[in-house]
Image 1 (cartoon, helix red, strand yellow):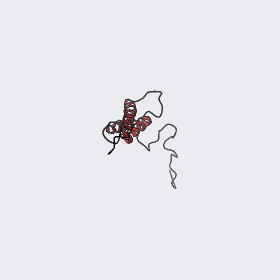
Image 2 (image 1 turned 30 degrees about the vertical axis):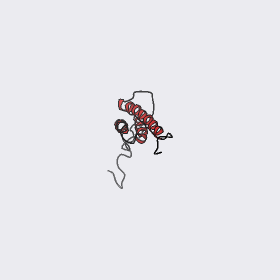
Image 3 (image 1 turned 135 degrees about the vertical axis):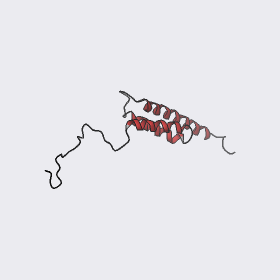
Image 4 (image 1 turned 90 degrees about the vertical axis):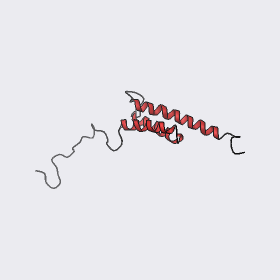
Length: 101
């Protein structure tokens, strides 16, 4: 019989075998990264491109070795392309002679 707040089991889950459930899982991060990368081609590529790279990198569990989920690779590659295109676009609009005068 348990009394005074002491249950029969002190630690219901072993910390060593179970992952942290505080954030999104890797599959969700991969899908979020792909969505950000595709949306970045149309709006705010300079922001959504690095977000897609970050989500893809976290979805790959921050390593290049081992099995990599396809959405994570797609997110990293499209995010990198998106970021490079946004930087080229910004550099092209900042050159002298293309302003108002």
